[in-house]
Length: 150
Image 1 (cartoon, rainbow, N blue to C red):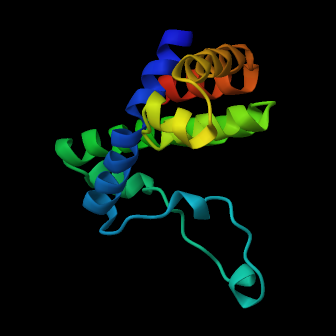
Image 2 (image 1 turned 180 degrees about the vertical axis):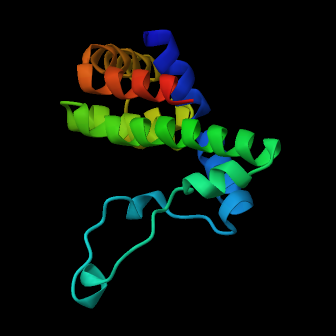
Image 3 (image 1 turned 135 degrees about the vertical axis):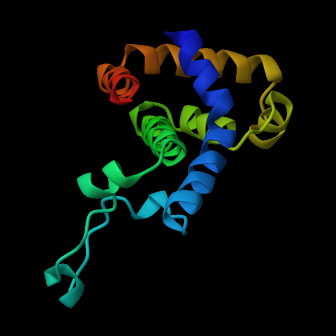
């Protein structure tokens, strides 16, 4: 499980770009993930909203390529969301900073320079992060659910 989480962390950058590309290809725009689940106030809260996903009729009309892209989009959105949410599960603030730097694609050397640590300390912190995440049942369940979604 730790190896799988490590691979997902390493792949986060390109999965994030792929989510944007697929959203643009399927919907004609790229919806920012930070707006997922954001509450609205005033008149916007009272107005009816359409679903951000595809309706059953739209899914049936999709050609094979669009269907494949849509399934890939759902899979990558789940992974990206799980990785972004996992930072909240970490106990130590320094671990959260290291985790965020890893998501940003920073190297051990650049993280070490930023935090005034050695590369070995960064590696040990990363190992502790991976160990914590593999033991958090919420994170593991979220990853397992998205595996079976597509």
